Length: 479
Picture (spheres, rainbow, N blue to C red):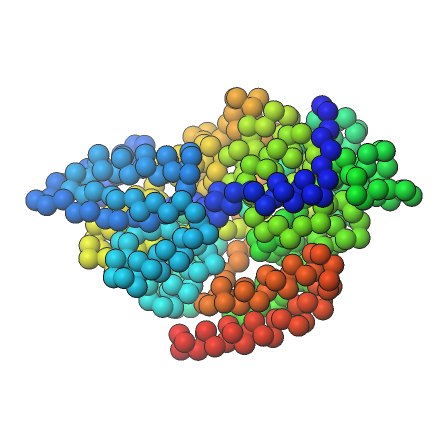
């Protein structure tokens, strides 16, 4: 395989154009209170005298959008008394503002996606319906062990244990690597087994070995030309989800879940953030960037060409990564104190403005069926949140070995990511009410760290108290 030279400027241009939609879209569970067929979809409800339309807001493009539309079609075929109107907002970055505008105008959707970072804000502001009673009464969803626990309950409930949504699926950051480059360089690749996770020093050693300038020198060699790098060793995106994975591995967290306040100024957090920054600033194995997109097709191009043969990416990226024309490998993230990754996804919720809560719940519960989740498991976009789909029998319904870019999706050993790494070592991040206001202070401070203007300890000591004051004020609004 011929390596492609990638300068700092090339990397930043690629990153700037990266699409973020698929990274933000997580997954969907729930189940209809109606009777299920053998395939897991609901059977037809008795036709009503008048057809009820339920609006459903969401994002998605390509295969993801098509999967949603296919689900709507299947549901409508089985529920003649209902019609689902898809309020399609293609850009996830504009989604929250669009939905809030609809709420303010009195045209709130009946049901829809809710992003993880604003879910608790929506709950506090009473924009979402309490679905606890429907959930517990449901003969399928309400069964003990239907979802992966305790993570599902933790992410979906408020401080009183009431449910306001159902996580769409699970997704998590892990490593992708170009196995052809590893073979060429005679480097033993990382493992999908969390018990064999590389420690940080070994990860750094490999990233250094993979990084070369246009004369073949490595960053630890005299004369290495940082301005003419032929191949970078690694890319670790610098936004919340991949950073939280690094912090969790170091024994820290983004938010103290007991208080709802940021703990990014604690040593466990600042050390992990600095480790990621030092990949760029100190060890020169990663191009300097404040890229927060962590996604888009640019990353698959970098991996395919070998320009960056080791990339931290979300599991959802497998939907396009598996199509690269190179031997694709996956692995757990390197560890500092313990194996760890971030578990995340958007929610499916019922909005408080719906005039048809019973019909809205029928659609909501359909989104938790095996039928709906299998569509996105098969293409590599989601990881299961339904425990039955993680059993050997359940995985036979969606898991396919990647034998070539045109055959199969899941690289060799990926079943360990699904069954061992994510459920055992995944850490769910719950952003508190009003987090988006605090983030307006945190993100610019982190960007200063990643360009070397401040250390992580300096930047977080400066802004975390200010951000926490915002969060404390937001928490009082719900008191």
